[in-house]
Image 1 (cartoon, helix red, strand yellow):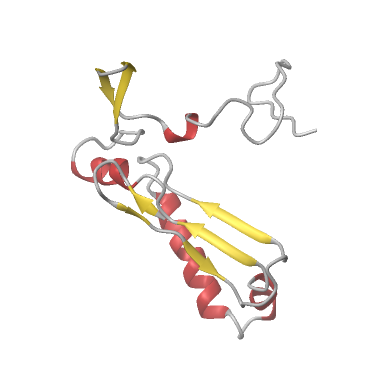
Image 2 (cartoon, one colour):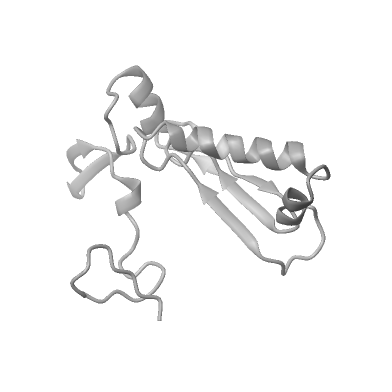
Length: 134
């Protein structure tokens, strides 16, 4: 899919039985927070389960008749940092600046770095993390 700030590769796997480009798709991403180690392992388990059971299990075969896009590790820089340096590191490892050219800190939380109104409307109702798409 691309390279990270520290030069690691971000992989994206597509699992599909081929054919129709208009069929439903499933997107799974894991490891956006580097310290949550179980998420990439779960994504790899899903990949393994879909591939090993396709054609042997009717339910799995029906599932793979959708297009699956799985990114097992969104934040490889931060993930590697948690294994080698700081177990509780959450962010990526990019240089964060407050003003052009002024270094403030290392890392941005990728799960909090989407544009405002990403994915739909946002209203300030009195509920944490309210998301309206209507």
